Amino acid sequence: MSPAVSYQPPFRLSPDSGSVVVKGGSVYLFHSGTRDITGTVRSGDIFIVYRISPSCIMHEVGKVRFVNFHGDTYMEAEVIEGELKAGDIAKKGNISCLIVSTEPCAR
Image 1 (cartoon, rainbow, N blue to C red):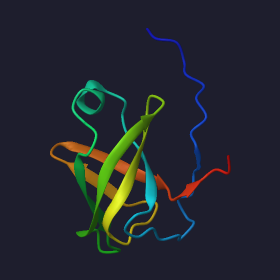
Image 2 (image 1 turned 120 degrees about the vertical axis):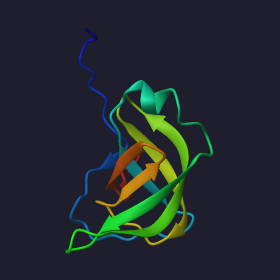
Image 3 (image 1 turned 30 degrees about the vertical axis):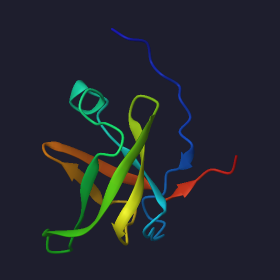
C-alpha cells in the first residue's frame, strides 16, 4: 500500500465557473492515476474533448494536447481546438479524463 499523497494542484477546482478556454489556453484534468494513464500518455498526445448535453448525448467540442502530469491524479493540457469548460471529458482511446479547472492559481 502506498502512502497518501498531500499534493496541492496548481489550479482551483472550478466545476461551475462557466469559464471558457480557447486555443492556446491551459486546462487541468483529473485522471485515475493508474498505469493506463501514467504508462501510456506521452508529451504531445492529443485527446478529443466532449461535452454531455442535457439530453445525455456526447458532442465533440475540441481537442487538447497533453503537457505534463501534476501529482498522482492531475494533468495539464493545452487547448488546440474548440472552446472548453470545466466538466468536459477528454478521451484518448480507452482513457477518459475530466476537465476540473480552467483557472490556474496565482503563483
